[in-house]
Structure formats: structure tokens, C-alpha cells
Image 1 (cartoon, one colour):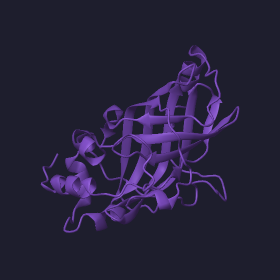
Image 2 (cartoon, helix red, strand yellow):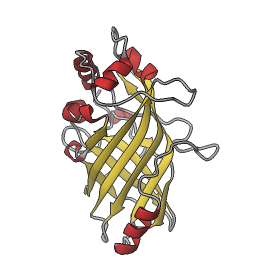
Image 3 (cartoon, helix red, strand yellow):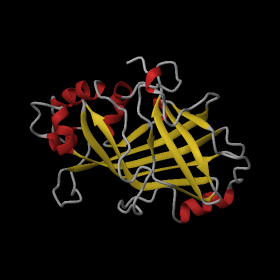
Length: 245
């Protein structure tokens, strides 16, 4: 593995990122089902066995709010990112259950403020509709979320999120998140960095083929996600007048 001082540049750029995500095609108002992504986290025979062995969540999930502490997010791909992840993301992520049916979940996500409550200056984004047919195991995606790195748009593609709710919905655990990022979209946030795939390699990852065939994308995987219930309100469409920014 090569050693790149550019990793420090990545850290500096990411710590100044705007993590507010914006709604795009595939994030609510979907015109067609989303396709893509090879990862099947939270699904398949293992998930089926886990679902069979655990009690179903016995309470209504709609309207419940959960907070994910950054410390529970273990970045396993690329592994070198894990050591600096708490400097990249230093505030909880809020997950709101907008709607539940017997087979689906609709999740909204926003970045919390330093006090752990919803930050009205942060955009609310909607995950693709999630599969809830294997209660208590949920599996969201694959789909896309568009975010901003250093003020420049970048998209999490082939994104999947999974986890397991406890019986009374006080928390969900064993969460995983998988996504693909395109280094070409990250480049504007890292001026002067010419070899982004070299940087990914320095972090222990590998650039692989994007949807257009160019080998300039890399996989992001986060494991061990835990989300505890938060007793607070959540606005799907925050009032811009309450934003202090």
C-alpha cells in the first residue's frame, strides 16, 4: 500500500464539508423504482434466519425518532477512513420513521446540532423506501442520496441501509450502510489533489468501475450502527425562519 500525505488533505476537506443532503430523483417523489447495487445487507438467508429467531417489533414505528452517535459507526471500507471518521462526522445523525406499513418503512434523515437535536439549518433527506417484510429486520435501498462536499454536489450511489429493531422499538442495532462514491465528484472539494484513487488506496480501499465503466469509484461500508430512540420532535420540512445560519 502506498503512503500518501494527501490523506491529510482529505481530512481537512471533509471536516469543512456541508453534510446537508438534498432531495433528488429517487429520494421521495420517485418516478420509477430504483435499481443498482450489488450489496444485499440485511437480506438473504442470513437475514431470514435472524428475523425468524428474533421477536417482531410489536409497536407502531411511525413518528419515532432515533439518533445515531458517530462512535457507533465503524468504517470497514476503506478501513483507513475509520481512524479519522470521528473528525469528519462529529454530530449525531437523526433517523425519523415517516411511515410504516406491514411491508415497508419510509425513513427521513438529518444531521443533528451539537445539542443532539434536529438542526433546522440542515436539509432533511429521504431514503428510498425500505423493506419491512422481515420484521424486525429492515433493509433500505438500493438508491441514491445527493450530498455536498465542500459546497460541491456528490452522490452516494447504490446506497443500502439495514438494521434490526428491538421488540419495543427503543433502538435498532447491527446496522450497516453501503454506498459507492465517485472520486470525480469529490475532486472539486480537494483542489490540488491529482490522484484521488491513490488517496483511496492509501486508506486501504480500491477504485473500481463506476456505472459508466470508468474505474474511478470506491465503496464505502459502515458497520455496527446503533440508533437509540430520541424523545424529541422532528420536522420533515423545517421552517427556514428558524435557521440561525
